[in-house]
Image (cartoon, rainbow, N blue to C red):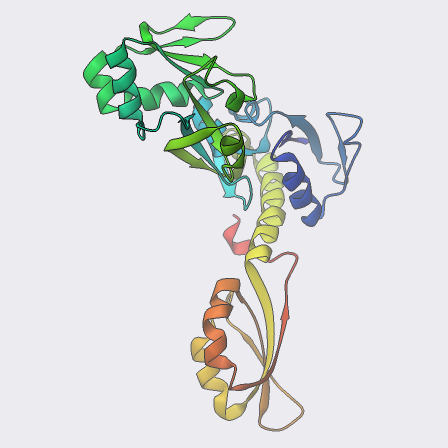
Length: 321
């Protein structure tokens, strides 16, 4: 059988991706020495790529599955199948300007002010397509410049005809560009601390992003590859579900059993077993952490004791075809 080609991201998503895979049962070695680390599944071939490359490689069929951010899927307009949203890489793509622009709080105000002054508006970003699309969806931009696209500038090419609004490719450290080399930036933020440290303030959110497991659509049509991809999906999804849920054991008097069952949600249905002590039952179930907090006041006085475990994985296999 040919191996499934699995791309894992380098950079900000790297650490959490390795942790997720390890908790899923995969043992990875050789990370320090190679961009092709080894994994304890002979049917998987791993490769480390930048997250912005992964959607393109998967869309083109060079890779079967991978982990990247939804921001990069949107940026490169990749035709991929999103299999699962993960629980990390939660960021916002924002438009930010120097704090000294006290009178500017929106993109419309930014565009209007630079147009009034007859100044060229320079926006530095790694997200060229998203930024241009966002600019051209703005009413003030359309009012002043119509459908004329902003001039997009990279070291290799230029496109667009609006010389008064420029979108300039950044190769990183985007926050350092203003005010000398840019008037605004479009970049991802998690906490906003880096923006503050660089004397910037966010004024608009273009989109929210998270890490996702994605697949090539043609790979899912291949019977052999599809089964292996769903094996990987089941294990990873089990970890994600396990992080959100808890395994609860409780002992209940028979007279309180129906009351408890009426308020206790379960993954499917709770397991109920009679105890050796007549008139007592054990309830065994898996529930969401948030649900447990809500129902605890309702059940606390009706049970003898509660034991709570955090499962490593919860495999709801009927949810993975």
